[in-house]
Image (cartoon, rainbow, N blue to C red; front, side, top):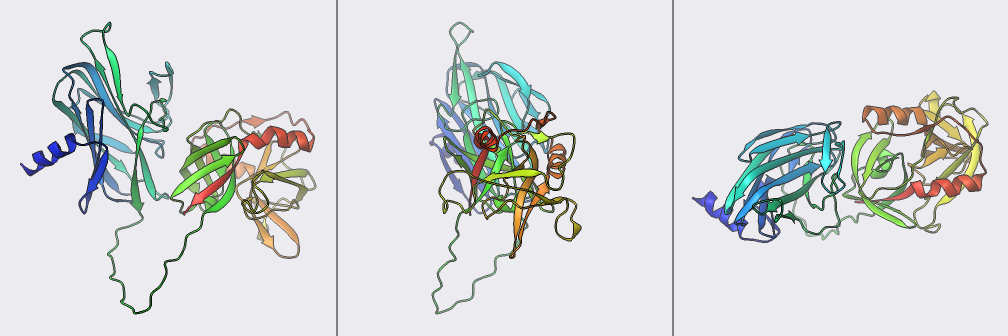
Length: 404
């Protein structure tokens, strides 16, 4: 009886979230559709957890309707449907095909999603499904996209589509407006240790936002350093005329690489150099956002050449270069005189010598291949003026703001 009362309370409320010690409920109540998602208050990195969805229809008759959960940080199938009362419950992940009713086209699924569909959905009837997932490793929040739809009317001629949410600034891979739920991820279960009482008042340590650089390798995904986006609670991408938030989709601590997925797409991206490898003495260009806003908010460019084909202590994954590099350049592209990617800026050596390091482009390409991220290569190698390279590439390079 208590569970029924709890469900009725959820059904008759607007968008909200409440919790007990272990479980939370997130409810959307719009346009006569009421959807409630039950989820854990926290999930453990690398461990299984379950989400339960219940959707209520208050319309007299709906020819069909459904509800979708999607997970922009989970590219491959890392979950399974555990049952429910919808007529059909389906799950999709890359590279399976999905259809967008808004764009009217079929395309490869970009990330894992589950949807329940019901035919002849009658008034005051609730439908449900459950999905079990494996919590991602290396991020501190799981983002869940939520949306639902009803087709109301007895035939196609007089039917109308009702969606929740009706309006939103966020969209999923099928271009539908969504609400987004964020679930904290912890690395392991730990017992809380009571604090030691003290008469001395201590001020909490202030957390500052940090910045770095990233660059697009296709219209949605971009590369940067892992240390630029490590432990971010939120990631923003900014440049002149562009602003978007981003999600961390993959990282490599050893090689200090990370892949971000931007919410707002771009029209162009940088290409990797193909064919003949970079040589000692070859001219290169560094473009990025050094020292945050200290040097001004615009993008900065420096030039130099390749001074060594290995990093410190003969590290074969790195290059050494003479172009000046500052904090904030980390994660930015190292370009050749054709404007192609030959490396990713990672650090500078704090000595009197001008020693700066970049990750070799082939290491980054292998990282992208492992994660099935598309990118382009250029085999023409047409040399260009530095100013022309700056003009062509600056729209593809963004400042990354990591909110701690």
